[in-house]
Amino acid sequence: MKNESRHLDFLSSFKTPYQIQEYIDKLKYNPDGDICKSPKRVFYERKAHCLEGAIFAAAAMMLSFGEEPLLIDILPEIRDDKPRDDDHVIAVFKKRGRLGALSKTNGVVLGYREPVYRTSRELVMSYFEFYFNTAGEKTLRKYSVPFNLKKVNEFNWVSMEENMDFLIEKLDSIRHYTILENGIESELTRPNKKLREACFLHSDKKGLFKI
Image (tube, rainbow, N blue to C red; front, side):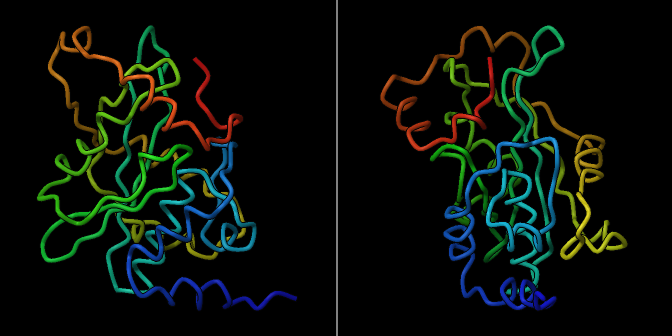
């Protein structure tokens, strides 16, 4: 029988935010983005996609350092009513008045950000040049206001056994800001071949967005 508090002890044991990033980096990537599992299930199953990793990181920041468990939802370009890439979700933390981020990614460039950014927009824009699909299209278009997971405390989000699919709907429903002026999309360049190859070098191919 599993020790029911083991995951809570672990989530409370980190010494630095980057230790959390190192842990979620080592988790196997979960290519099934249609479901969302709690930090408890991520701890026991040892795999996560970006939303699950962000929730896990937010829980660890809350329990280890007393941080508010904040998420920012990042959305891709929509063309002909269809997305051109996957959404991405980051866990946001603050240090000395500046924002940083923790993130589980299926590439190598959409992960950790040092706490040096003054605003959510600055933080999100640090991902812009590296947020591209397998066709090399830079696809980042919107980001949400920070969402505090304490708003779903009634669901016992840290330890619940059920899927947390309700959170996907909540993130979809909150306010998102558009970051590009009209017409500039046609002027965006594509990343060079070396950067594209490096980004997807260790990716789980099953989890890559299909163009």
